[in-house]
Length: 86
Image (cartoon, rainbow, N blue to C red; front, side, top):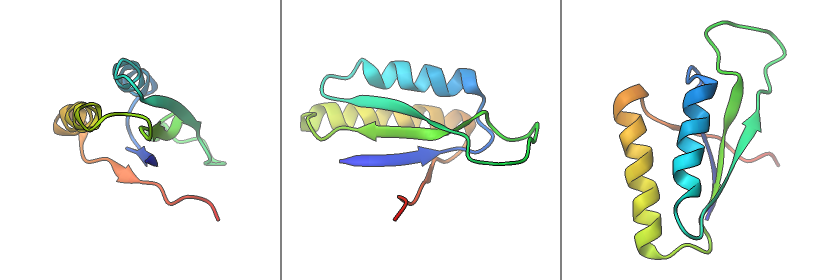
């Protein structure tokens, strides 16, 4: 399943850390989405979000992805789903 998630105030370094952790899970690929805001705001992240593709992952690997995302959610706040562009 491909999905895009974000946490608007999450720092770039934390996004990179989350992506690095997720990339260690077999069958999972992760990409950083570009920031789409046209105005600079110190409170906004430099990243637009994460794109996670776990279509080739096992059930156990998908559960590991959820545990990793929950770990960061517990520390920084709930992830938000990004609606795919039509």
